[in-house]
Amino acid sequence: MTQGANSGPARRALLGAAVLGTAAGAVGAGAGVAQAGGSGPAGQGGHGGHGGGYRRLPVPTVIAHRGASGYRPEHTLGSYQLALDMGAHVIEQDLVPTKDGHLVCRHENDITGTTDVADRPEFAGRRTTKSVDGTSYTGWFTEDFTLAELKTLRAKERIPAVRQRNTLYDGRWSVPTFEEVLRWAEREGRRRGRPVWLHVETKHPTYFRGLGLGLEEPLAKLLRRYGRDERDSPVFLQSFEPSSMRRMARLVSSPRVVLLDAAHTRPWDFVQTGDPRTVADLVKPEGLDWIASFAQGLGPTLDLVIPKDAGGRLTKPTTLVRDAHARGLVLHPYTLRNENSFLPADFRRGTDPNAYGDVFGAYRTYFATGIDGIFTDMPDTGLLAADEV
Image (cartoon, rainbow, N blue to C red; front, side):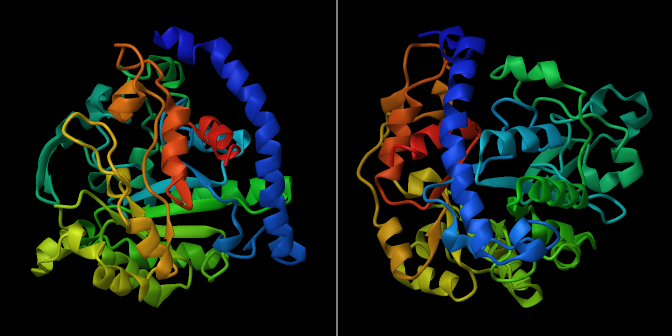
């Protein structure tokens, strides 16, 4: 099966038409959540629009990974808007700082592949090599640009070889600040009569704190300013570094999620402080007890929910979902995408790595484990799959 047959305009039109029907149900559920939160601005999703808490989100919750990044360049207002229009329950942002301390939305501080900076001669001298969390990168980095300088750049598709259609939108949007996203969410919340939920990650917090650009304090300040600092606020905070979520727990009451990489890895803050625990230790009962003492959820890689064998095929689910639920933790694993190259081998179709595989089969398998939600680059597909549960 070719990519054209699976992801061309006809198929997207079909998915879009179908998702309008299912999204209406999803949006209706979201509206019900919002109305349950109270009257006035909160119930309307305006300034500080609360939605009765994360437990009242639809399950499975469809989280738009970097927005609708399967269809638009990631972490742009265009990507976020499309995800919301499709009916995504929650929209994700990754935060990194500028040189002058503003929080902006990029998956990484290395902006070489997600902006046109390499084509800008005035910034040629900013190209450098850095070690970030123990890995060496050569390129351009947000912490070397003021916000004013960064705003002169334009966003572009990160993986054009895989998502060639997305390159049509290269240059359409700038790099958004998180405050711009908060204002956008307020406007959309008022327009839709329900809160716009966000899933906000602090990226490389130990690294940035070492540069004097700590993420948590400015993030907390913005959350307080826009009324998203309470237990029932329409926001999740997340990080691969547990210490970042522990720090956020002292600053705001917003729900927190600890992200988990592969089982053999160690969070970078653990590496820096000499904590010997690995992710495999954190998903054991004692590790989950510790996480539950300061967080409300987990964001594990999907392999921690259902491991793969040497051939990339799914095996038997672990006990993570059951064990986490026993401690009151919600699970939002990452990331399901439609393309063959990103799917377990069981669900790949044909030989084109960029063609769409049997993603609905993959969704059914993961949803059957009892996860509470999932990150996806294609929210419309995720919503259709969630509607079958």
